[in-house]
Image (cartoon, rainbow, N blue to C red; front, top):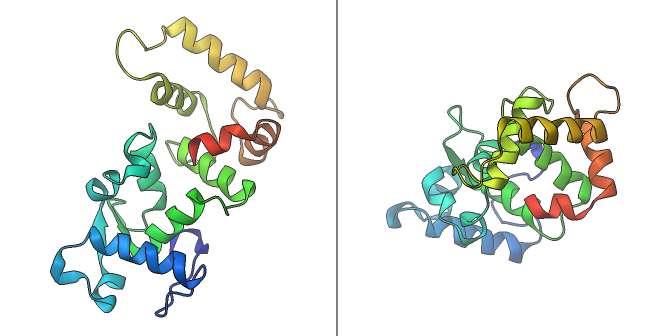
Amino acid sequence: EGGMGTVKQSDDFTLTGSLPSARAHRRFCELLPQEHRSVEESLQARVSLEQILSLPELKANPFKERICKVFSTSPSRDSLSFEDFLDLLSVFSDTATPDIKSHYAFRIFDFDDDGTLNREDLSQLVNCLTGESEDTRLSASEMKQLIDNILEESDIDRDGTINLSEFQHVISRSPDFASFTV
């Protein structure tokens, strides 16, 4: 039972071709305590979010905590299994399709996990991008104006939120956007 079923567990690491997944397994094992690095144990083990957040690929990403939560299959969403880790790496890889990247970008931006991007999600998204400090944070009126503009541009059915297909439509017109996130 992995994240979205994009990658299936296999004992011989032929998931995405043996070399990339063997490399991924080695990286995953480096995050585990020495005594849990055998193949059997590592496939059962979970790595804490703190350890995942220390990976160079995520360190500077403003959405790193959210990314980990989206890929975690643990009930408390505070750790990643090897399968979760593989899913995360595959979405971040150059071989992931724009559809997969935009699907996960949407889930990452959907902070309340309700299946739509509402004003609150968009506000959190903007704060992640601009930073939370006093000098970078937008004023309430600037934030309202920006979110009004985003919805004006993206909310095709005018229901006050952006659903996945509306989001993918916007992304298809600006492909750099999805690669910026994932």
